[in-house]
Image (tube, rainbow, N blue to C red):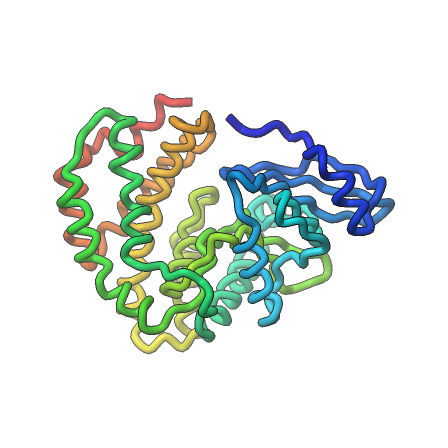
Length: 332
């Protein structure tokens, strides 16, 4: 069950220690993890309080990646106060203009916003990953796609060939991992419209939710942005932004990069189907079921690429058509 949006008892003392004594604390948001967020008000000033219970969350990776990004001119929220023992962080407040809702209000800015987001990725991809970031390797990718047979298949009542499943994936992503191993870049891993912020008066987008970053392939964050589970990205925009990225990043072989993009898209979208099912079955968060058909749409497009022939063959043999996108229409 989701944690109630009540500030932890230690919050007032924490805020006082960092110069925000007596500030008002208002609920802001929870997410798919155990983290909760509150907005702290002191006169006209605001900050964001992150509550990451230490028994469930570790704020160390967030601080490590934020420091790396700040040092290189990117825009994560700056830490204003830290208590590692209690899992509390006071952060710079970027406001409420997440890119997703912002573009609902001002769709004419879609192209400009996505070009800005792609430019950030091109800059990230131009420099090596920090050495203290774990690799996005075969073990990590295998754990993630395993969420599909572990959660999705049982939820819809069918069994699958698990041994053949991982063999198919490993054949498909072998060349992706070669690039990720030889020239790794920082992969934020949840780079999409709801984790990007339009900041008043500033052109650089603010970055959120990067604590799970790994060292991997530059196409991963691009597919996360352009095949967004929470927001329908027009295929025409996806194609334009792929070309934009290849130009900005001076990609030597755009066709090979596209193949890697599709493989990573399939891997990510398969993982998401498992995660969203787990959120429903284990964590009593059925809201995510409504996003499954969109994710299936992306995955079906990914699987059409020749680089994914072994994975497509496995899906054709193991996942009936009526257990795919339309299967979720009957759930809340």
